[in-house]
Every structure is written in structure tokens, then in C-alpha cells.
Image 1 (tube, one colour):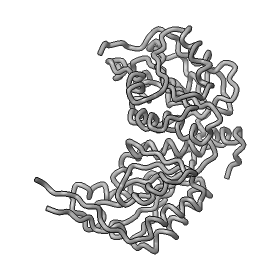
Image 2 (cartoon, each protein chain N blue to C red):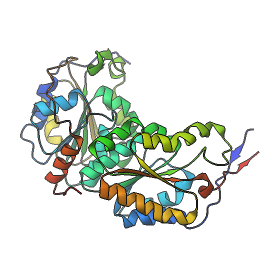
Image 3 (cartoon, rainbow over the protein chains, first blue to last red):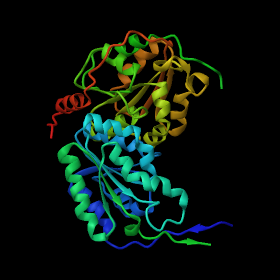
Length: 180
Length: 197
């Protein structure tokens, strides 16, 4: 029995914006652990011959990958869910100490109107955990905020050799609908 | 699963042989002894040494290989470091970069922390994991003749390769690479023609 999960309906537009901002910043590698909130960007990345898209088994793999791509002269971004931030903590030492640019786009759970309370501890700790490890953060709760905030984060990551994360709030993504 | 703890090869001799006369090989090292082994073979602008982020060496190699498809990339790491990035074997197997080789110096132990026996030393054959995941060329290397056979394959860029080299569980004197991560990053990038920001 249990509950079935349905993919929420998204505001058209901001998901495409995530991809177009990354493209505009010269991102050549999009590495990800899937999330419904990133599905459009992932689809667009997979279909783009100029982008290397890499599915990961766990989020910290993306930090190593993007460091390697930057050693080779290319930019990338890591798409992930907030639960994966916990997986990244120790590996965030690499961009912090070696000053690799790191751009993360993080869809939030345990953030607003969360049905599954098991998501709440990591969701509530996500931004603080990133900040503790030296990652600068911004959060978007409205569709119109995504493009300028991601542009800002990408600019500061690639122009400042810095770790930057844009958090996409649960209010933006939409309340996840659960059906009995 | 048979318990085989490492082997008889001398880690420093193996790494020195693999890197001797290197041309445009790009080398990423896992933290700990593998970094010391590569440093002992001679510091080089084309080396990137990891000092932390355990489990990341193979993924740094993957990102580098994808950004530099016309160069040969070699990851040299230990069995413990590779075990922490176990999932990376699956991720890399899906990408199949033709120019990436992963060389695991396998002594079957966590050498840096007191020589506790690792999963590799308790019977997990990492090269067989890589083979099952789909790496195009995998071997367990147990003698110097096989090291000599491997050496030219690191530069052929004809498939994703994964080897375990069965080395003696011992810690030779440390030869420390530079610890300034930003310095070795910028040095590495400069050697490829990329300016700092």
C-alpha cells in the first residue's frame, strides 16, 4: 500500500533559465545527482553536444570531477538536491583550500511544506553546512529570482575561484503532492 | 573470495618505472602514500597531488580526461582511497573516456593509519569490480614485466583502463609534494596554457 509520489507541476521558465545561465557562463560540464526540480536542465544538458553531462552515484563525486575539469581549463556546474549537501562536506575542503571554482545548484527539501519529515534535518542544515565549509549561498523562492541569482553565483564562482551555491527553495519548486 | 593482502612489488619502483621518460602524461594522485610515490619519481608541472578529499582522485581524473581528450590522464592512488570513491568506478565506466587510466597501488591495507587490513586485503578485487562495470582493459599486476607491459598502454588513449598493482604493505620514507593546493592547481593549468583568473 503506502503512498505514491507524483512529480509536482513547475512554473514554466525558471528551469530553462538554470540551463541558459550555465550556458551563458561557458559551462561545458553538467554533473548531477538527479532531482525532479533539475529535470529540465538535465534533459537540456543531455541533448546538448557542447555539454558533457555526467550522472553521479553521490554528490561529492561532482566536486572532484569539476576540479579536474578546471585543471583541464573548463567550467562546470553541479546539480543536486539538498540532502546531497551532507554527502559533500569533507570533499568541500578541496575547492576551499585549492581555490577551485565550484558552482552548485541545489534544490531544497525539508524547507517549506515538506510532507516527509525525514527530509527536514538535512534541509534545515543545508545552507548553514555550506556556509561552514566556505561556500557562499543565495536562495531563490520566486521564479524571477532564479536567473539573476544564478548569474551572480556563477560570476563569483568563476571570477573569484570561489565555491558558490544557489538554493532553489521548495516554494519555488512547488509543494510535492502525495497521493494515498 | 580469497584473502590476498597486497603483493610483493616495490611501490616506489613501480611508480618510477611508469613515469620514467613521461611526455605529455597528466597525473593525478590520491592522498597519502601514492602522492609521495609520484613525488619521489620526480616533481612535475603535469602532476596534481591531492592532500585531502579522500575518494576523489579518480573523479578528478575523469573531469580532467573529459576536458583534455587529446592528453593521456593517469590516476595513481591507493586501494583505501579508491574504496572511499567506490561509486566513481560506476560513474567512470558509464563515461568511458578513452584517455583515462586508473592505477591502484594495492597493498591490501590502510597504510597511512596503522596498516589495518582494507577491503581489498580481505578479498575485494577492485580490478574485477572495474571489469564488471565495463572498463575496457583491467588487470591485476603482480610483477615488473606486467608493469612494463602497462607503461605504454597509459599513453595509447584507446579505452578506459583500470589496474591494481599488488605492492608490499610497507611505508617507505615520505617524500612530500607541495601542499599549497592553489599553487599546484595554477602550475598545472599554466603548463596546459591556462592563465590564472
